[in-house]
Image (cartoon, rainbow, N blue to C red; front, side):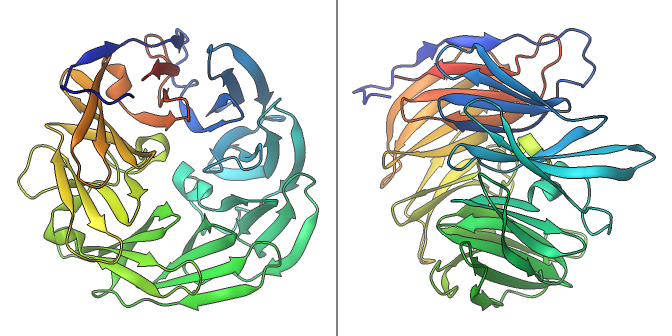
Length: 400
C-alpha cells in the first residue's frame, strides 16, 4: 500500500473469489493452508487444493489416499514442500492408517509418505495439536510420534537422517527457529524448551525458564524471534499471562513481557484456538513484538508494541473492533480489523504506530474466521474456515 497524505478510505474489491459449494454440509471446511511458489493451497477433508495467487484459477489437487481424511497440515511449506497428516478416524474415534505425506507445492506431487503413530493417546485429533507434531525446516521434516519420539527425514526424499530422539515429557509441540527444531514441553505446570540442530539432531540447548507459578497453557506466538506465551493457572479466572522471548543461540531468556498488566493477549480473534481461527496474532518489527491485546473491560482490541527485551511498550493503536490478523510488511505493520459491518486494513508505521494508509475491504465475510496471507506484491488472501454455499473458500484483495 502506498503512503497517503490523508486517511482516505478507499474500498478494495476482490480480484478473484473461489465460489462455495452448495449442499456441502461441512465437507468444504478448511484444515489448513500454505502460501508459496505463487500459489495458495487450501486443505480440506478430501485433500489439498491449490490456486494461482494472481488469477484464482485451480492449479492442482492432491487427494488423500484410501478412506483417510486430512487431519492437519504443517504450519508452513519450506523450499516448496509441505506436510499433510491424514488418517482414517471413522471407526468410533479410533485412528487407523495414519500417515504423513510430503507434497510439492508447485505441482501437488506426493514426494514420499511414512506411517505416523498417534495411537498412544497423548495427541488429540484436534487440528492444532496434530499440527504441532510436525515441523518443516530447510531440507528437514520432523515428526513427533507417540511411540518413537522425534523422527527426522530429508524433506525431498523422505530418507531418515538422524536416529529417533526422545521427546520432552508432558504435552509437547514443535516449532522451527532458523536452523533449529524447537520442542516446547509442558509437564505438570513446568515449562521446558529444547533446541535441536535440524541437520544433525544434536541438542544445541535446553532451558527451563522461570515463570510466575505453574503454567496452564503454552502458545508459540512467533518462531523467529522465538516468543512463547505462558498462561498461568487461575482459580475460577484466567491466570497471569507472560511472553518469554528466548535467544535462538543459547536459549537464555532475552526478555519478559508482562502481558497481564495491559490486558488479555488475544491469541484467537473468535473464541478458542482451533485451526484456522487462530490467524496471525503477533508480528515482529525490528526490536518490537506487536501483539493483539484486549484491555480489561474494553469492548475493542488494541495493538500494543512491546519491546523484545521486556521494556515498556513503545506504542498502542486502537482498532474500534476485533483485530483478526497482523503482519509485518517492510518495516511496517499491516492489520486487518472488523468493526461491524466494515472490514479495514491499516498500514501502521512499525516504529511509532502512526497510520500510513487505510483500505476498506469489500464484503463482511473477509472479516470472519480464517487465515490471511500477504505476499511481496501486497496481495492479501483470505482463506476462509468455511466453503459451503455462500461462503467463498478463498478470495484475494490487491492492496496497492
